[in-house]
Image (cartoon, rainbow, N blue to C red; front, side, top):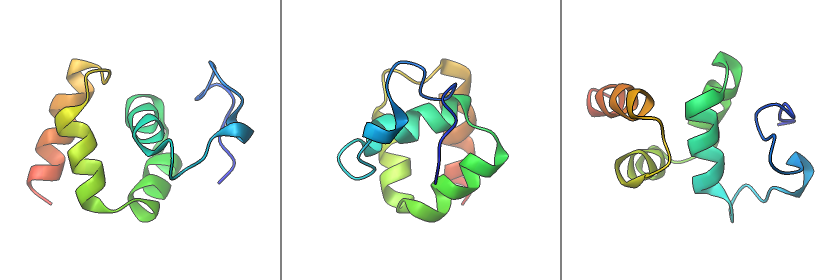
Length: 75
């Protein structure tokens, strides 16, 4: 997936290792991603990993964390 530069404004998206930087990618997409990016995220990463990142994240915005906690709880 080619990411929008505005999604990863603080780094070069071409330098992102999707496995090594999984937490960073998941947090950024959940906080600032569009529908297409979130669908990609849910298809690319394991459900358990996404849930773990949401539960342990200290950088997700509170409203994002609350929303995804509810969505993942019912999935």
